[in-house]
Image 1: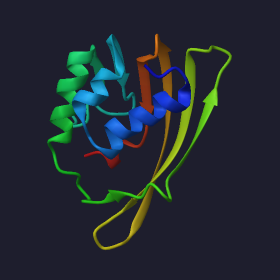
Image 2: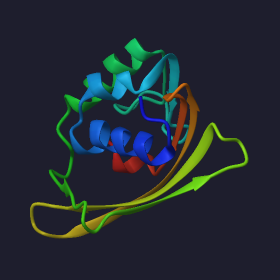
Image 3: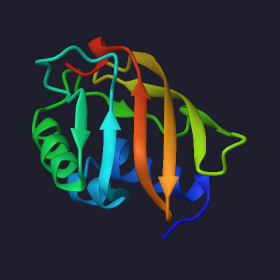
Length: 136
């Protein structure tokens, strides 16, 4: 199991944004882990709050089943992130700028902040702060 922020974040990005693998994503969480997106209004395709590994698996699988609106692809070479450790060794913050290239070659950048709370190498709480208009 990963033990440092870089490993945990790397696995999270691979399972979520890059491969959209709900099973792999859910396995990164503790059995009672919580994934929250506080800026998402209720009733949207992207879930506002998922509690428990199985709810995370089902909720993200349902979201991933919808095609991305733009049909764009993440440009990993131009995207960037900075991880910030905190005074609490179980908490780190990810500051992210994701570059997406649309089929017509135009690019957009989605900036977001994620706060991770870790327990025994797994995500116990992830709070994901981003513009809700970017997901549905």
